[in-house]
Length: 416
Length: 115
Image (cartoon, rainbow over all chains, first blue to last red; front, side):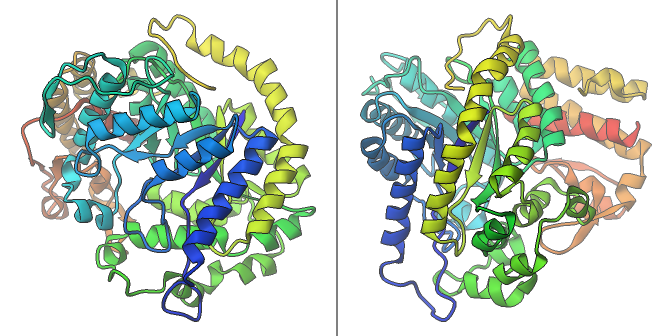
């Protein structure tokens, strides 16, 4: 199993103020650069950064290509993942996406992972005039054409439903041929199966359990073998899953350090993606962090400390919502699969490894967590756990993957 | 591993299998229309899907049947509440990714419902 870090660039407002500290965004952005630099030195495999717009406090990551460009100059080996680029044309013209991906690939000496997606919140869809009912069609058309632009010389032009352009040679071309490995964001099982059929890696935002992941891995690789109709020019077989992450010398210390990270992550995500709240958000007019602390005391940091431990898998499942997206939010706030001591993480992460997960992506920067605790967690994981998982990735998982991919007639470009 | 063969009802199984063939042939719009028919048949075979309620993110409860994805072939909520489900097509053309999404949903739901 390989490992990555995941960034929303969460920037909660102070509890007792109506606006941010003037230094807040600079601090969060530069802390991310430091964290990824350390992860790179320790051998972490990936960093993924989202593209979101107007989601105050929840995500200030609206220009991930610039953060990635900065990281390309401060890191040596870590793969730079867009997790994801919004490809519906009203967000980003397909040619501009192709140009940026290729440029970043050149700057980073071929380390780009091209994640794609369509967005879901009204703040973003409404802000850019994207019709919710058409966003999946837009994603598909634009993603296919971006791959064509990256791989074709010249690009023959396109007359589509959502964008058209004449023949042009879209330059520069990426170092990775025919194009960097491609992914799609998957909050639901159905999208993971779309990923399989299109030959894309699935960046799972569902906080899936090891058992669910096992079922998905079996089906994903079967569909990839039997029903591939690639959207790009090369397949990128792979399944990644997100988990909230914090380490400590003891489980108690990790829980204490985890603070209001997962709780705020889940609360603010739920706020923007719930029509009753997200669709009516007054721009600049709320303090979400304060609302989270006041309205959801059971989710606040102090509660996690007082709980003195993790919820068991059975306890987590007892109150789980039926809807898959709601379930992801529920789990994001409660699951402690990657929160704890070295001993605990070794045990829980092995469960995913046993189900053949390709990549585990950690959400470390969230809510009111402290930079120094995130740095120490990255350091602890990198020194105490990463080498053994990497060793088994090479000695065991690669063999399993090779079996899954046997007989595929399409070219593969994957960093897994 | 979910396959159409796991669907017990012959007509439903045939519709889902036909949609799969259409999807594999790149005929996304035809596949979506076939899956819409399959889902309406499922709701007639398993009317309990119209009765069972689930909570939504807006805090309301809606019939379980409303989990059918709203990607342009949309289940009319009023019709569902009146137990006369119908699917309204908001447009004429569908993409492959939409056909794939409807296919996975219809197949999984049919098998889970024991249809």
